[in-house]
Amino acid sequence: MKSLNEPPVAGENHIVSGMAGRYANALFELAREEKSVDAVKADLDRFDGLLASSPDLARLVRSPVFTTEQQLKALSAVLERAGIVGLAANFLRVVTVNRRLFAVRDMIRAFRALVARYKGEVVAQVTVAEPLNEKHADALRDVLKSVTGGKQVNLDIKVDPAIIGGLIVKVGSRMVDSSLRSKLNAIKLAMKEAR
Image (tube, rainbow, N blue to C red; front, side, top):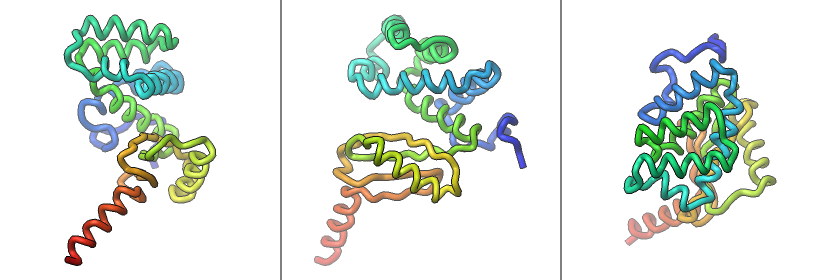
């Protein structure tokens, strides 16, 4: 059995594919070499939280109308104000200079998945109609922990009011969709077929 501290073999890790995966992999390897995986993850989580809570920052990150210089200047101010330094800050600047800032949330998600695998944890992608309070998040973690054979479960929560209610949970390739939108669509389909 392979140790979690051994570097991944090429093609072994399907969770980090594509451009975002390559960036995340490079950052993860650097963070591991510098023994700063947890610090980098904490900084990226803080930046991701800023993105989620600031429409202006999200627009700066996604919009192609801003020049590299404009994005870099604004990003530097945000990083300084948030206290994000070191490897994570340098990574975000490189992503900006390479004009890949639009994909930074995918890179952060891929980095989290690499960290989770490295630590023997599982990441569950959860989509909810409104933010979960800590009590419900803990209950969900407990249920998922029993399903994953006792592994520590980290929640990657996305709020999507379009699902109306319920939740969608994806752990690896397994997905449970108990959203109200899906149930309504199933009822609508059944009604069409009954005609």
